[in-house]
Each structure stands twice: as C-alpha cells, then as structure tokens.
Image 1 (cartoon, rainbow, N blue to C red):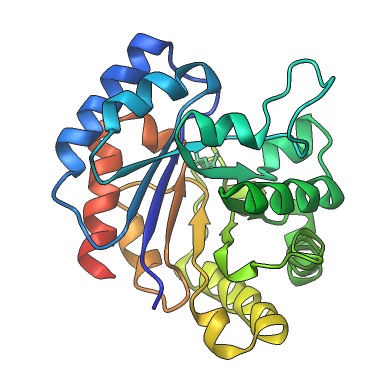
Image 2: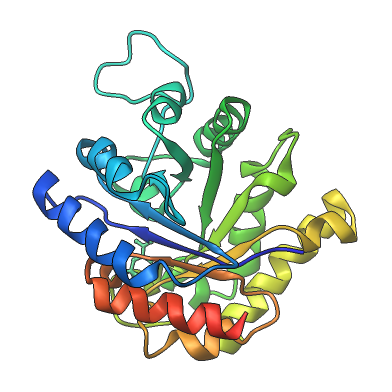
Length: 252
Ligand code: PEP
C-alpha cells in the first residue's frame, strides 16, 4: 500500500547557509514522523550541503528540475546522473512554473520522467489546470492530457509520484477545497487504473500542491486519493512544514 509523502519545494530561495539552517530545523522537528517520506528540494546550489545535513535521517533529497540527457553540450543544465551522484532520491518534473516561464511541454516532461526513472530517480510529475481552464470546464481534459502524455511509454509508472497542482492555487493563498482536489485525484487514479490495472494504480502516490499550510492540510489529507503534499511557500518555514508533516502523519 502507498505511503504518504510530504515534499518541500524551496524554489529559488535560500543561500547555502540559509538552506543548511532550514534543513537542520526541519530535521530536528521531523525526525519523529515515521511511516512516510519527507523530501526537501532545495535549489541546486544547496543540494550537496543539504544532503550532508540529512544524511542518515528519515529526510530525503529532491531536485527541482533535471535535463533529459545524461551528459553533453547543454550549457547550464543538470543531468539525472549528477543528481543521483549528489544524493537525490526524487526530482520534481514539469512544475507549472517550468511550463509557464521555461516553456516546458508534455513531451519534455515525458522525456525527463523516462530518463529520471532509468537513472534511478523518482519523478514527482506535476500536472494542473489554470484558472481559465477550470472556468471553461476543461480541467479533466487538461489534467488527463498531461498525465497521459507525461507517462507515455513509461515503463515503471507505478514508481512515479504525481502531484496535482492547480495553477491557480500555487503561491496564491487560494487552496483547492478538499472536494475539488479529491475529484481530480480520483480522476487521475482512474487514468492510472486504465493503464496499469487496479492494484498497481492503488500503489501510486498522488500529492496535492497549491497554497498548502498546516491549517488547511487536514481536510485535504482526509480524502481517499490524496496521499500527501507538495509544498512551496510553507516549506520555507520549519514550523509550518513540520506542522504539515504532523497533520499528514497523524491522518494517513
Ligand atoms: C509549489 O510550488 O509546488 C507550490 C505548491 O507552491 P505553494 O505551496 O507556495 O502554493
């Protein structure tokens, strides 16, 4: 059966010193929460230092992006082999900020997911509709397309973590209601069931992301198909992040 996951996406925040301090504070508060996975995704520049802080603990390292080639003339890019080498277990792929500002599309996401898996990294593949798409009533079309295209010809789909992150909820303070999120999570699990069969689909972790805080996670995490959270802003404050872990560990 699937276990809960709480992942903190620090985005483009924190120097090395700030990252070490935050990782230390989270480590001290989160050590007691067993039974699930806690992932820290600092900026690339702090991956090594954070890996040193969390070595031997229940915290795992994640990166925020990856290239789909192992090596080569791709100035400024980071390969999955490099992430593995530095101690990453997870990598966030297809975050809406990557899709919006860096023009990543479903085919890029798909290539990255495949390469991450063959390198031994666990992809956290992000999907989600914009405000406009929700208002038009095409949420399922958009999310369905992103899930199917992102997982096209992927061999170990049951190793992928999916994060449903409605774009209108990211960094806006406008969290989805538990019912809204559950509806999309169940829809995603339905797609996985069609591809993988029921048992394997039940093992896939589907995270909710979008303005999660320790005060609003309780209702969300009580939903059957919500298996954890991908947290942005609130993961930058140790107290908030630990509060979210506590709620999730207590309810799942
Ligand atoms: C995110 O960036 O993945 C995210 C969910 O951000 P926030 O929690 O700040 O909305």
